[in-house]
Image (cartoon, rainbow, N blue to C red; front, side, top):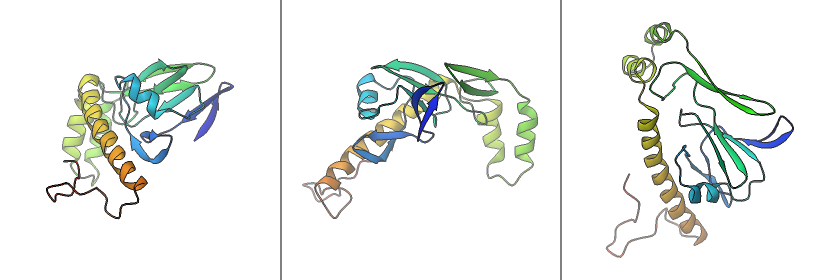
Length: 178
């Protein structure tokens, strides 16, 4: 979705970003350490000077190839080793912000619902979130699987194959291991 931020053209994208401009239905997570070559490939064809993304629950602000890539973070499930909310103030500039809040009360409110696995969610995400490094490592591993899978599926779609993955010589289906 295109937006204008402080008079600057930008692109806001809340789910993971498209794997390539040529395959907009293929999505990929990006992190603060996504290799520059992959990020340039993902953003090829985008004219926006500012790209705002999310999904990984870890804030970052990067400049690459004339673009600014910002992840606003997360209000309800911050994965940066500290309880609270991270967010971005968009205007003539981008300001990454952090707001502490009563996570004990939020955890109690979640536990009072019928939310499945409320205890493990509140303990593992609200009260004792993983560090930004651990979350980034996890999302980079997920992103690599997404990137490989989208590349394989893109090749299959371009070849007009009727199966989701080309067959292997040994008769297997060629699908990457999950």
